[in-house]
Image 1 (cartoon, one colour):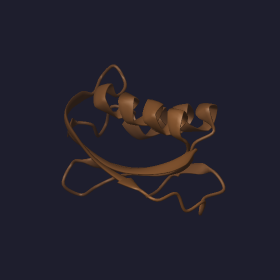
Image 2 (cartoon, one colour):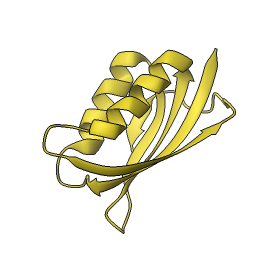
Image 3 (spheres, one colour):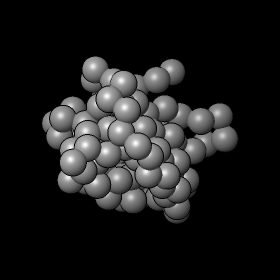
Length: 91
């Protein structure tokens, strides 16, 4: 089953390779979508793919890379749209 998750991660999540690690893991798992820094210091991402792989991405967002300190993850589960060809970092 395919699914989509829109997440916003709060804490020490910028300047700690959060986007790069998210992108690497998503591509490894075959998850499509994007990740970007927000002006207020949070990170936002959209994940699309197989339910198990997307759930693994959401789990990663709760811990992040080693230098990150995640305080909160807002998750909005959405209907799968299949609108992405790859996973990329948005600027």
